[in-house]
Length: 364
Image (cartoon, rainbow, N blue to C red):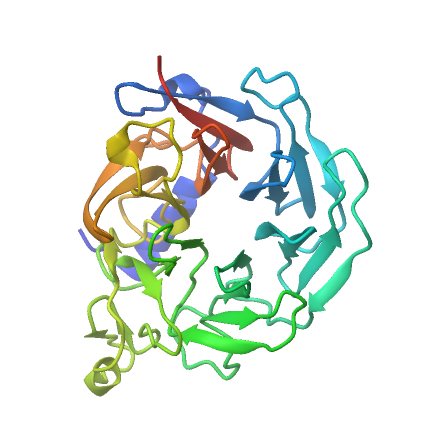
């Protein structure tokens, strides 16, 4: 059922303001037979994107507190021993990555880095390497280093659907590791929050969140293979070269790149990763996991889960739920943000509503 814009907004606000369920237990979450999900760390506030340090410690950005937290498991019991505030005083930190002796963080207005000396030592002095990024609108900044040793940064749109004046908006940009040589790598990407690299082809894959207010089932959310110089459609087109009714200009769609995976509209896909570990069964090797943060602009909420995209010879073959149960018909107690393969082949999932990082393992 498609409802009016006002009705959908009211329904969504009521849904998102529903108190956290008293049943917010990991026992309510469902994973496939042969797997187990448990809490790795809790009480984190709003954990977003994760990264493993050179000394194999899990780090996560806490967007609401403006911090980066280290979560070591010193006694190897499968759970974090403590939460260490490693960096403080950041402005809406989202992306995080370790590269060449530094920890890089994407603040909403800039990219910064700190010399990394181990999780139990103070980081180096803060260096602003990419200043004055556009703020407001889609404000999260995700970053990733490619096989070319360049830094890729996602900069979402300022609006739902509009022709941007700032050409950096709705793009993935590329920089040298020190922040120099800025260039627009690809455009037409409304909000590509998640970035990851295919382990074999070395291609950049990214999620993209479609526009709102076209009803419950349009436009599809996307996973794209990002190529240099290409246009992925927004704001003029969505999905497989479909003209957006706001502009109704089919000519704009003739040269746009179609998504490699289409997802249920308003699922809000964020982090994604290819499974390259050795813990899961062999059939999972090379498959893609995507965290669906969950809808607000839909009469019947969707998302709030982690899905598995089966990949064969580099081509998606189908999508299935992998971890779900953060949402019931009337309540929600979690919103998956990022997925990360750990050193033992486990899959970490961050949840910025429950304040938890979960760990999924093969059950013995």
